[in-house]
Image 1 (tube, rainbow, N blue to C red):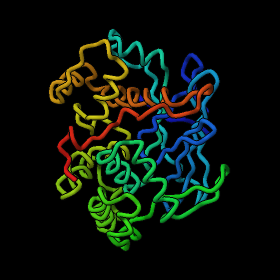
Image 2 (image 1 turned 30 degrees about the horizontal axis):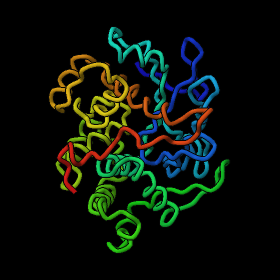
Image 3 (image 1 turned 180 degrees about the vertical axis):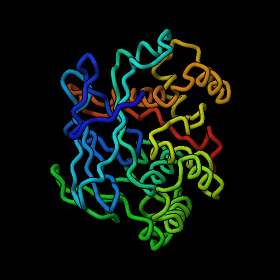
Length: 309
C-alpha cells in the first residue's frame, strides 16, 4: 500500500505524476518561493532539511539534504498512490484519484513526533506554525542549509531549563506543561524508545498525564507511518474529509463519522488518511499562486476532542 520514495525524492506514479507532500506536522512552513520546508532530526544526531518544491504539472519534487551529522540516517518518506485503494466507488475516492499520489516525511525521533502531536492537538495549525518557527529562531539551534539559515525547535533539555515566563513570552503558555512532560518522557526513555514496538510505545505514552491518547496516537502515527493508530473519528481527518467531499452527507458527530470512516476504509485506513490530509496542502501550494489561502483544515482540536489545556 505504501512505497518508499527514492533518494532525492524522484518518484512518480504509473502515469508519471509526482506526489503532493503531506504537510501536517507543525514544523513545515511555506516559504516565499512556493516551497514547503522543514528542518528535522534524524538518527544519531543528524539534522536534515526536507524541501517540497511545486511542479508546474502538479505535485512536488521532494529533496532531503543533510545539514549536520552523519549520513545514513535519512528520514523515511512514505509515498501512497491512490490507485491502490480498494473502495473506489465514492465521490471522495474519485477526487483522491484525480489528485494523484502523496508523500509524507516521518518524524525522525520521538521528540519531533511529540512536538508535532502536542501543537497539532492544542493550537490552530497556522497559529502553531508561527509559534513553532518563531520559538525555533529565538531559542533553538540554527543550521546553514542550501536554502539559507534554518532552525530546530529547542531540545528537551532546553525546554526543561526555560522559565514559565520565557515560555509565555514566546506563545508557549498553552502547551508549556505538555512540552515539559514530553521533555521528561524523552529523558526517561532515550535512547531505548526506538527499540519498543509501536503498540508498546503507544501504551507507554497514552496514560501519561498531559499527554493522553490523542497526543500519543498522533505521535506514534507520525513515527511509524501507520495512521491506523489515529482514532477513526480524528478531528483533523473529519475536517479534511468534509472539506474535500462537501456534497456527501458525512456525519458531523465524531463517533458516527468514525464508524463510517472505518467501514469505508477498512484495513487501508492509513493510506486513505494520508491521501485525505494532503488535500489541504494542494489547495495552499500552487505554482501560479504561492500565497497560503486562509487557515488549514486542522482548526482548533481542543474544543471538539475534549483535550484540556
